[in-house]
Image 1 (cartoon, rainbow, N blue to C red):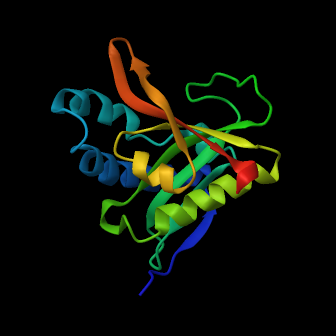
Image 2: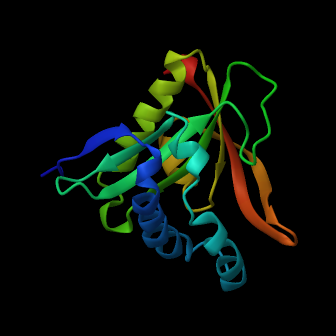
Length: 172
């Protein structure tokens, strides 16, 4: 039986709920693909909700029947880190997570399908994604292709290994 899930736009008041989701998700799901040295430095930084995303109107939440946030993710025209993109039709996948207790139940896929449709509605034709190593198969199912390995700078001397992926929304 499919769980009852509602998808809605996030707002600034969802900050604590998204923080709780990220704190549940990233340590458990990423541990198999990243060494402890990366986990101890990176997870406290990446497992924090981004207020600017929650206020953007482009960040979505999946809630279970009790109203608990069980998945989240969104998109922006600017690159992660606040850089403004130079390509008008290119969107960037932002801060996606699914509760580890509900992975592989279609909830993350449903959320990301809506994120991609939301971006397409405003003229985005391609999506750029800095995926965790863990999420590469998930994004591949959604039509993303691997461009190559990269490192996301998180602060002085702290980098997070990632995989850059691209998807063509026009083909969807």
